[in-house]
Amino acid sequence: MPIVFTYPRLQDRYIELVRACNGARTIEAHRCAGEYARAWLDGVAFALNLDDADVGRIIMAADNHYIEQGIERPMCGGIWLDWTQAQKGTP
Image (cartoon, rainbow, N blue to C red; front, side, top):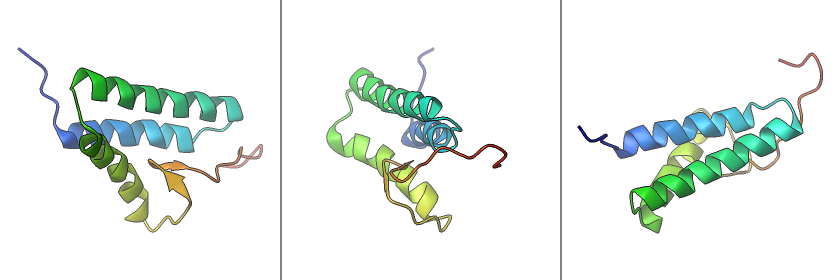
């Protein structure tokens, strides 16, 4: 049975990856998680033959995920552009 990919499922998975990137505690973890999220999206776009508009919908879902929560930070594809390494002891 083939695996069915829907936009909500793809968007949810991408948001999970972006949240991992934004929640990283070290510079290295943040960099790796961001690279993984971008590589995953590139791979999905290639495997499913998605056009730019399809990929844009997935990326915008990540931005909207934070905007709907009232989080107003500079971001690109949901990844915060002003991310900084958490200080020791910071939740």
